[in-house]
Length: 421
Image (tube, rainbow, N blue to C red; front, side, top):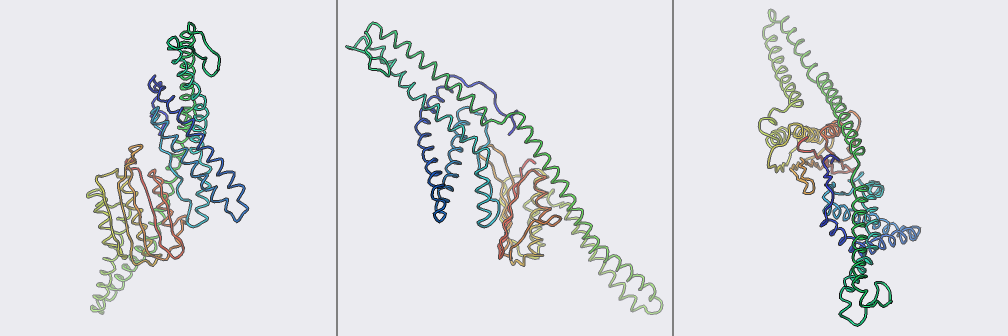
């Protein structure tokens, strides 16, 4: 989400009225929420030396903090229509307890969460000012009808007002309270925009960082792919073609003296040639899958599963096509995952799930896939390896990937790519 895509219209009177109503409620609800947060934090820190019991309260503190920020993002976006991206929990940083702790720390240090919490805190403070101002407004309205009664009192005091002055004081109280309430509403709109909406410079810096990461991923993916092709040609097709040449040379020498042996050598060369052609086709398929362009991802994955040495269970549910870049990135990632399962994991089965997902908050469409095998696990991303190629290919397409492969298995890889990448 770039700043250029965010609306810059000024909030209207109805929006300010809605802000005043929300701030009045936030003055109460926010005070309760921050009291709970401070309780969790103080109890957690105090009990941390006691068998680590305080850790449970600190974990609760982090997730209540996130929930507070999430509610604030949704509230502000629904009120002002800034088009803010939905606040999401940070993805897992790895398997096991250590990975969970790293994920918790990443969540605690998430800048977006703290911005949402800060906005909620400011809204709570403003709400605490709104509540007495609303009471003042109601008292001012009451003063308008004071001449009908026996006596009237000034707002917030026990001082009596002569019925002849009650109407004037009531009007002044209404005007002053309304001015202060709308001033608070304007201040709230200004502060929330400054805190939650990224500046143009920050948005451009994020775009540049993302573009740089995609470019680096594309370069790295091409290097890994080139290395793989060189290795496959050097270790597979090239020796086989050299063997064919040598076999044909021996057959040429024997064709006059021993025709039967020459014929056998020619048959052997013919068999090796067909095997080399098959390997070349597989290499070409690894560069470009024509069935992917012609018939789509479902058909391409079905053909891939049919050639796999490991039985593959496919669960593909797609309601349309995506860009060629997105489909190619997903296809080759799944292909490499199945190849790794056949070569290294000693798996007896591989399951592939593919979905087309739509984010309800932003409307963004993504291609998502999960590849899981029942092998021995222990897979790691090694520079130059197949998984490294997957990660860089997905990054180059603007997507994300997550590997979970504990020792003993199973191994699962999840990838997600923007459909329009």
